[in-house]
Image 1 (cartoon, rainbow, N blue to C red):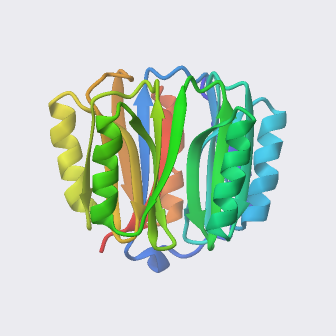
Image 2: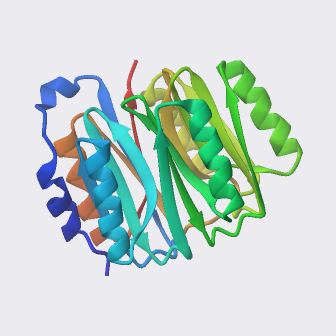
Length: 266
């Protein structure tokens, strides 16, 4: 049985803004059936320091953080059991060079990067042991056109793209070997309405959505042709209140939250 009561508890500390203030801001949730996760919780806080406390609280309850997202005045964490992870840690820094040095330190300790998030001028890295990855590379590009070349380069070398984040004037990619995601492809558009149309087309052709991200004015959707889940869905809403009301319904219908994205319909 999926656990969803924590969602309402976790949101109690969040400052809720009026729906009107989110006029063009969009929250997007990606869901799937057939994952190995056995229970989930979603917690949000206004400040990074508060979500850090929440992360450690969920660790004590036996949950691992599987996705972290920052939106308008909100940090949101998706937690789960049954991930296969054996240990977890995180770092954050407002200085990119310092952040990269700390990433290297965690990698030397046997941790793999599972998520990178940029918000409130802070870079946050989420790490885990037990991912199954054999090798990882962290890349940065200032321009979208250069990031596209980087993706092709490492795909050609046998890596899978396992994480994407755009912020602070750069595109960040995490490439891994021995990933369950193979035969990857992606789309990128300025507007969410364009992206979701292609998502439906790709679902019809048998592709699955691995990740949805937004940054530097672009929506980025990553696909894989290898079936990982049995069914997928997404939700997109203007306004946090409307968006958060979706979780309970998807959990009730046996979907797990795979990731959350926050962006703008430019």
